[in-house]
Length: 308
Image (cartoon, rainbow, N blue to C red; front, side):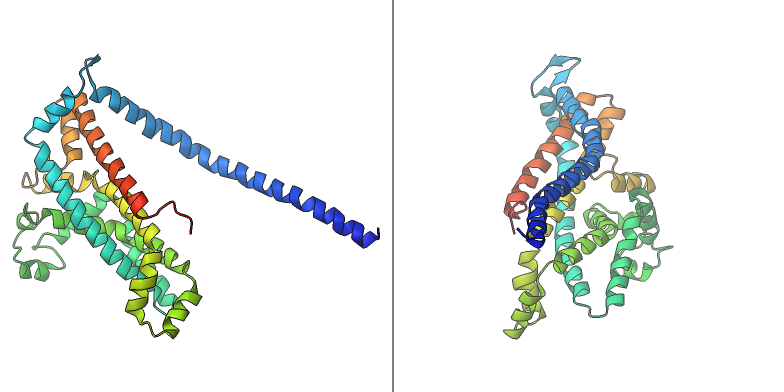
């Protein structure tokens, strides 16, 4: 065997070992990144959930079956809170899916790279505000006496802040606040999803005579299905936990918005006003069960775990 053949054979034998070492190193780095998250998930997610299950089915340490759930269901505040959260989630999710996908496709179609980047940055800025500070900003926007868009509020027949947070308008107001805060991040994610679509596919569609609308409807949106499903799942989980926005609005409106507007607010009242942690845990479990059930539906409907 010549020297060159010997070297080639040596390299061929070493490649798998190097490949294995790289995979092993990547695996160790993955474990390193995942370990802190796993520990926090156990400490602040799984263990509190298990404790909530224990509280929901017990009272003073004794097993009571579904009594805590039945007590909560008979509470006159429970079903209105369910209705409020349900309307808010429907309005918000429809607004989120339609506008985020549309805006992401529009930004992705911009030919000027700097302008596209600037638009993504502008969209993302509202997401930098924390929930409570974002609501504080909206208190001024919704007050016609100080709002920069008072002309628009008056055109909509809103003459005062109390009128802006009227019960008939509140789900839409909360949906707009939530959209303004969270849409920017999702637009950036959808933009990344659009970048994964092969340019050859888009070019072939253009050659066949497809316009921008046809390409968006028949190619881009179907190929973004997994990301859209992921957005719906995460947004739904966040929407069921509606708390900060109605709580701040309740304090600002001096009772026009109820302290028990959402299910999370009602759970808070049970725990810290009525000292009934068992009832609060029962509400939490109801929210968890609904969120998990609908998330499973969207996971399979959206093909989230299907291979590309």
